[in-house]
Image (cartoon, rainbow, N blue to C red; front, side, top):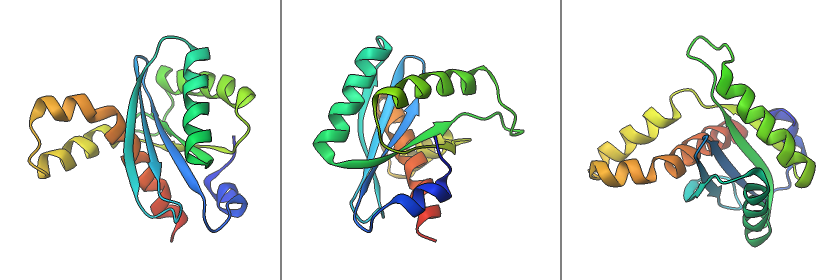
Length: 151
């Protein structure tokens, strides 16, 4: 895994990134455009095992010509690392052994709250908000990293 600044140096002008919100049961996926301006929710993957997850992520990477992965790091509000951080790191270590593109961990504090609030502003009903919360959170995470990369 590398830093966001190292990723910035490695990326070519036109390249797409994938954002991942790594939950224990559901994994949200988002993808950005090749100009890296807008993150779009893509899909929610239901976690069965690490092999199936790696295969699904790899399929998305190949189908969409993805050049980097941004994974939400679920830090505690005080910035400390809890059990969920270690779970994300463990899964991403296994994924990076099989998928050979750069991976960045990105602070995802408040991403779920942020994506839920955006859905509220769009007047989307609650059941739809909850159904899409994982992929919307992934888009929120990816958008934060895109904004950083573009400044």
